[in-house]
Length: 79
Image (tube, rainbow, N blue to C red; front, side, top):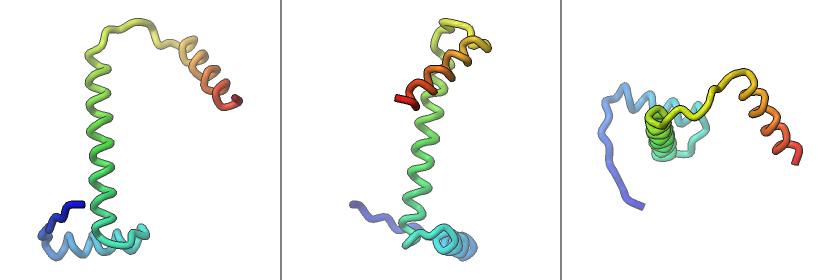
C-alpha cells in the first residue's frame, strides 16, 4: 500500500477528525479512503450514464415496460 501525506488547513483537519469520530472510522486515512471510493463510484456512474446517453433508443419505457421490469425483479427475489 502506498503512502500519501496531505496538508490541510486547521478547519479542514478539525472537520475530518469530527467525521472520523462521528461516523466510526478508526483513522482519518480510513475516512479519506472511503471518500475516494465514493468518488470512484460516482465517476464510474457518470461514465455509464454518458455511455447510455449516446446509445441508440431501442424501445419505449412506458408503464408496460416498467410493469414488466417489476415482475422480473419480483421473480428474481422469489427464486
